[in-house]
Amino acid sequence: MPLTYDFKETIRASAQRDPAFRRALLRDAVECILQGDLATGKAVLRDYVNATVGFQDLEKQTQIPAKSLMRMLGPKGSPSVANFSSILTALQKSEGVHFELSLKC
Image (cartoon, rainbow, N blue to C red; front, side):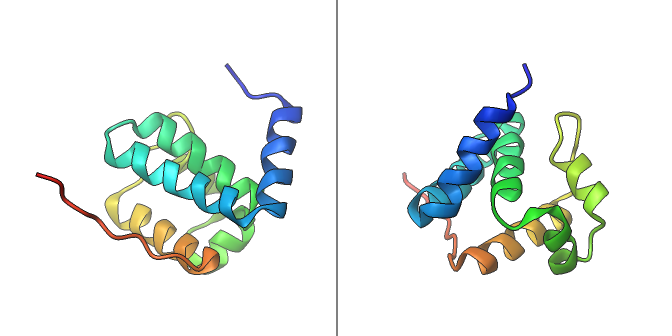
C-alpha cells in the first residue's frame, strides 16, 4: 500500500526538526536490513533519504545516478553490497554518525 503524501510530509518535517528522529530512522533502516527484512529496510531508508539529503545529493556523494539509487531502494530493487556500502557510508557521513556491528552470543 503506497504511503500518502501527508505521511511522507510528516516524516520529512519530523526529520528536519529533530536530529534524534533522523538518526533513529536511519538506525531502524539498517537494523531491518541486518535482521533480514530487506523490503522494510529499503522503504525506511528511502524515506530517510527523501526526508534528509535527497537523491540528487546522495548521487553526488556516492557517484551512483539518482535514478539508480531510487530503483535500488524501491520495492523491486536489489542493491549490490558495494552500492549499499556506498549509500550507508555517505549517509553516515552526512548524518555525523558511525555504525558498529556488535555480536551478542
